[in-house]
Every structure is written in C-alpha cells, then in structure tokens.
Image (cartoon, rainbow, N blue to C red; front, side):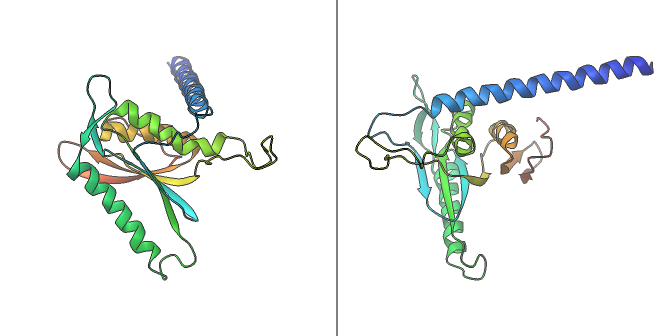
Length: 205
C-alpha cells in the first residue's frame, strides 16, 4: 500500500511538472508573437498608460463581448468604466498625498478585457513582455539615431479582472513570472477581493 502510494505521488508530481512546462512554452510563443515589430503608426487600442516610478497593471471589462468575430462590443458603464475610473481616482489620490509614498509616483498600464476570458489572457501577456524582452538601448538606426520604440512597462502587480474565471486564468499566468494579483472572486454566497501571492497555489472554482 505504501509502495503504491509512493508511485501515485511520483506520477502526480511528474504530471504537474509536465503541465507547468507546457504552460510556460505556450506563454513564451504567445509573447514572442505579440512582441514582433509592428507597422508604423500602430498603437495599443483600448489601453491607458500613466508613467510613474512604480507601475501597476489593470484589467477591466470596459467593453462587452463582441459579436460577428469582433473581440469587443459596446461600452460597459457600471462594471467597466466605473471600475476603471475608481483605479485612476485612487492613483491620483495616492500620488497627490506626500505622506503615503514620498518621492514615489505610481504609474499604470490599464487594459480592456472586453468581457472575454481569451482576450483577457492575451492582454495579460503585455504585463510580462518587459520581463522576457532584451534591452534594446544599444540598438541604433542606420542614421545613427536611437530607435523609436515603446518599451513595455514592468508592473509589480495587476488589479483585476472582474469575473472569477477570468481572474484565476490571468493569475495562473502572472504567477509564473512572480507578479502579484489583486483579483475579485465570486461565489454563490458572497464576493471577495483576494491578493494572490505568486508562491501560493490558486484553487479553481
């Protein structure tokens, strides 16, 4: 019985290790494809960027789920715009208070999930690009000038998303890169806000 239990534990451990490596490889290829050079004039749609000494990420359903092959639909005021404004208001209050974080300014990179789990997962990869991309400060153009590029921000934590299923999916990706998440969990009884430590396992709903 003890021998059988040992084999079962070993098999479960190896299975989890394989799944973890598969997930890491999938993240790498997705981020690599997203980091390819884009055409001039390309900008990130449905996003807000605020410069600061420390950057926080944000994921909010600003738009509803799109139809007919479109990722995003109509604007969502209460569950989308209001939560976005709440984060911007909190950052503004903190940055204007010299006693909370003296000589430190909080920045943000806020993205739209469009109320779709797959789109939220794709957007969350933006937060880890800065951790895997090479520094291009030594890159020069043919004319001798520096390249016109926008470096991805290094975020220390991500707030969102709103739906539990989306939050857990995003947190499972970000924890691989040791990024904290402040996410909302809903169940049949109550709604709670939980800080997810990258070292702690995340239980599925």
